[in-house]
Length: 250
Image (cartoon, rainbow, N blue to C red; front, side):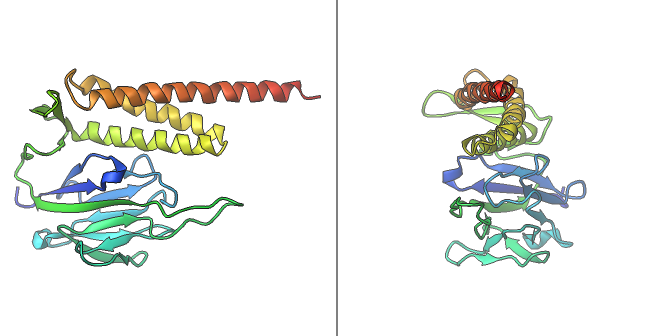
């Protein structure tokens, strides 16, 4: 197991995202971040590219860092330690992301469209890199696919369920897609919003059978499914009315 490493990405509190874990080694050497649904870490914030960045093991993995490569239009920020300022990763080049270092994306504002005003809303995460022994510590939120989920008690009497990595990834992608759908809906792009709602809900609904009835994740996921089913239905109804109005035009 000496050639494998466990990479844990802990996201900023504002994002509300659970930590994600990846076992890196000969079979999987890189973590992809971007807007694409097939990315390992899906992020649909304004300014995030389809393939935004890549984190990969160096040739000497025991060095204790990952290499970050920026592939984006709006940049990737790197913070080596909490006390240091963010530095921009030069595009198509690689910098070292040490254990405890942080990534922030995007770095700059996306180009304005017409009269829209954009703030730089970023997604940030901190890297923890450690040797992988074949088992995940109890405090982790995710496990490799195929392992039996474990649970631990919380102060509320519910349990914080340790999901397989496949479920954690599906949950993150579902959240990202419905967030993208809401953004499209708010801008009147209904033809983009409804397919995004549909794909996001498919991911979220597929997670539900894996959640125990006393899992702390179950209520928010069910609420997310219910709320976005309602919004998707409203978008579909708006599309129908717009189509009817177009047919009635002389």
